Length: 184
Image (tube, rainbow, N blue to C red; front, top):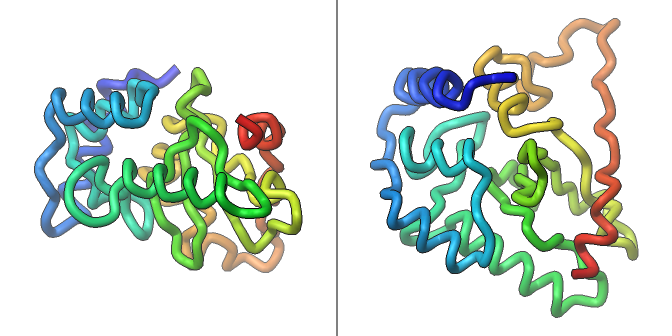
């Protein structure tokens, strides 16, 4: 098991080394206010990242969204996606799943805040038919694993991740809890 403190320290070091300007970290009060607005707690590791590293602005490729503040935030994106999902013909956004990184083309990395390990999911709307659950895939079994791939430079999202012709990209497994969680 990866110690949260060690992982947060390594993430902070890479964030400082790879981001020219990091926003200030969120205060404990701001994290608590975001959790109150969401109606659920952030996984401990995710809360630590926002409190101890920065309020977004670092991480894989497109960088973590800020938790709070002006513009697009984790809080505003979650509320927007849940609202859009509830109003549409095909519900697609599960309860308790926070978008933490926008990959572009409406794709998100999201954290299941109800999972003990903070499972990281990929939302890929292009895979969605008339079943919103078809758009959800397991990217990493835990937020810690996901961060470790970023730290090691081995994430699927890297341009050079599959330069070796013999290396086929591993397909992500569908997220089995998507149907029940979207229904909530």
